[in-house]
Amino acid sequence: MAHPRRKRTGAAAFVGVAALALTACGGNGDSDSGDGGDAAAGSSEIDCSVYEQFGDLSGTSVSTYSSILSPESDAYEAAFVPFEDCTGVDVQPEWSSEFEAQIVVRVQSGNAPDIAFFPQPGLLQTVVRDTGSVLPVFEETEAVIDENFSEDWKAYGTVDGTYYGFPNSSNSKSFVWYSPGAFADAGYEVPETWEDLIALSDQIVADNPDGSVKPWCAGIGSGDATGWPVTDWVEDKMLRDQGADYYDQWVNHDVPFNAPESLAVWEEVGSILRNEEYVNGGFGNVQTIASTTFQDGGLPILDGSCFMYKMASFYAANWPEGTNVAEDGDVFAFYFPANEGATEKPVLVGSEFLAAFEDRPEVRAFTTYLASADYANLRAKEGFGFVSANLNLDVNNVESPISKLAAEQFQDPSALIRFDGADLMPGAVGSGSFWREATAWIAEGKDTQDVLDAIEQSWP
Image 1 (cartoon, rainbow, N blue to C red):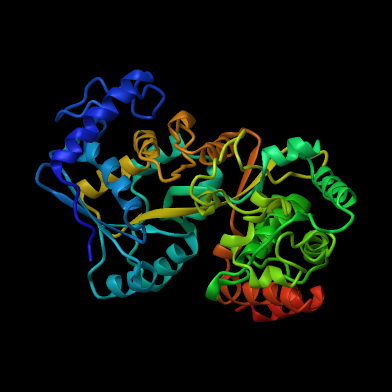
Image 2: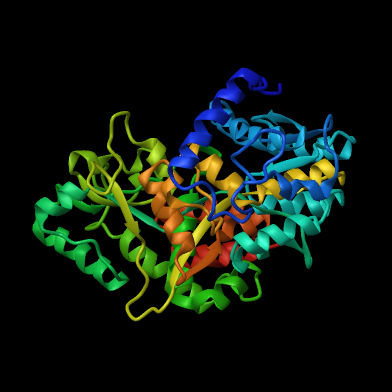
């Protein structure tokens, strides 16, 4: 069922409050759309003149479809209001927990939305190829995308050489969670290289000879998706050890999954995840990693049973209520370090992607808005940990400290952005054999080469 529309009285209140906030911080002069001084239709938050190129849009509507649910969906609707006020377009969002199961069915039955929010690019690619109904990114929208996103991101919305989708909400997976207080009390410093990370892990082992405190805690349980956190470890380390070109070949299966380079990366990951001296703080031995959910995996940091937990920026939502997530708080995160001597900062990311199914002026206008810095900044102010890879996002508008840290990673000139490899691989591998074999690698101690051979053999 569609989420109830935000009432106009609430929308007007939002416009007034956000306009004051924008005025206080210097407006949106850093955005792609100018200073907003020529705003028409009463919205002073965004430059309405940008949308004049699409003609008179009054009385039109645009439908959207997404897996985002309430209350987070309310934040999206609030960020749509300034566009509606500018253009007279009625944005009609539908929020559904059945998105992934229903999107192809709806498209093939002639009930496609105007715009869909795909939770990951692999699904976008599937719908493009299976339905032939997704439209290439509109030229007006692409021009705004080129102003606001790095070139790395365009590749992930491209299918068979055609550009179909662009990012919405994004997250960084290149994080290690820790307790700043526990580090300070023990005299530990945040490691800046992989070598520092291993040295720190060894120091924690030496400082706790009875094994009651471990360097790492981990959890890879996730129902039918159990094993995916291991894939993040492998992907992050693959990017650091073998480089971006090899990573791209590995994701595309231009090199064998069971190649010697891949084996070396898995063994590096195993030096932490399959090391009884390093894991699994607060839970038990290596095998407990498979029976511990990823949601619970980092919690022993709070009671001092472990010092570190590798997990994406979205993990901020999993800490108990009242936990202060901040640089000087109960928990925070540091960058999963690159190897010593690296000149770039590899960043593994995940993201939603937006794509259109209908070509009408109002749809073109709304996708152009969704690609803008105006939208990114307004949506960030609405909270729920939203962060965008939009280079013109003002990080001061990002509500949570960890999301702000992710935004800073995205905007770092030395950042080398690569998308979660499992999300880009064929489903039989990325959400199939990769997850299953990674779980067996942990839970059963399956031989690494046998794991890689099995995944290689499963490739379509």
